[in-house]
Image (cartoon, rainbow, N blue to C red):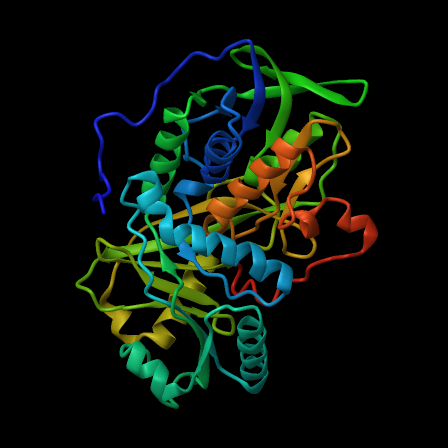
Length: 404
């Protein structure tokens, strides 16, 4: 098997935009890049442009905590996230790029009887859907992650955990660079510094976009703009049921390898992993207020550090190096919106909340399929915008964990 190239001499071109494309993708993050790659690879549609107002993967793709898992509760969720995880497992070889995918497992801790019941329910649902899921008692938790305090001392003692062994993390910028290089090689134009300022709609059909670098005609337009998806869709007169919130995270200074898995806790509200270089990566829930700011409130950081110290007293000597925030778009049922809109030729991929990174390959795969066919991909069918009028919601608030 050929070894993946870590840092090739050439990643992608920086072309000027053409005056017309078959497909224009608004948003150069992970989902936009994956969509372009699969349009070209799976469907032979290469006259495609990605329009990014900043630099490629400089938004949420650069601001997430890189957790990958598929142990969601509902059938619709496990279907798309498991498809994504299977794509992750072959992505480095396919894209010929080391994305540092590490299947170190993800552990969801329980601290009370309600937690235990919900976790066991999810383990059972996962197994019925073919997802690798296990129930761990406190001794198993300690064996897999020795630095967790499983004594009776913490305010919320650890009573067990749901565990997915195939879950893990990957290096977010490597993932973006790999998809970008793959799409560019297949002929896609990746256009940075190109802000979309309007979407042209004539007689109910999309005709193109107005940008800071001139008008661009398009046969189809896909909005893949995460926390700004509702603003961009509004340019075409489409209202999306989304709220945007800041989501904060932090990293510590570099440590020796001490944390072998990914640990999440809803009750004490923190999740922790250790990155490849050695820093601890921590996050919690979204700030309660709506905002488009890429920073958040100090009290969120303070609470998640306190929660982490309850579970991991060994972290008391670590230092916070930096914090940051992303803008997450959240739908009423905590599930994404993928597919067609009331405007013919206009497609959306949004509403992933804090779960977007893990879905990157599958989101690109199903949106590309939907654009190519002009109809919902089977995996995307439950996530149609029409579900909010039909009432067929996919309530993943619980299994979305502490937000992702």
